[in-house]
Image (tube, rainbow, N blue to C red; front, side, top):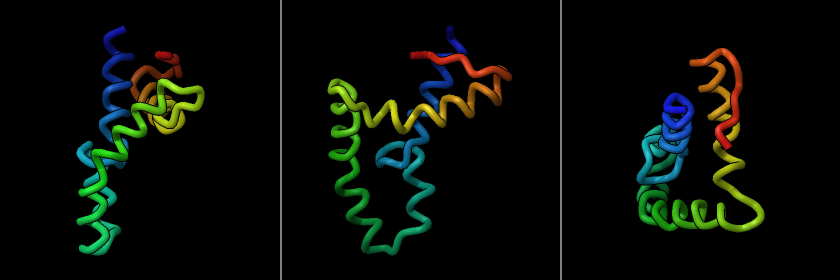
Length: 83
């Protein structure tokens, strides 16, 4: 259970939304002007994505499923859903 929780937290942290760590990967592909606005609106985007998880269509679930599956296969060797 602890491994599944850590896999879920790692996948969440790698989402490319500021202030999460995945946003640092995206900044290399953006111009300086776009990077500034990307970081300015990032917390609002993160709030929207997390708030959508309480509705019928969860953007967080849609974004985390592939990452969770990849990390689960990498660490456990078998995909076990934590949802």
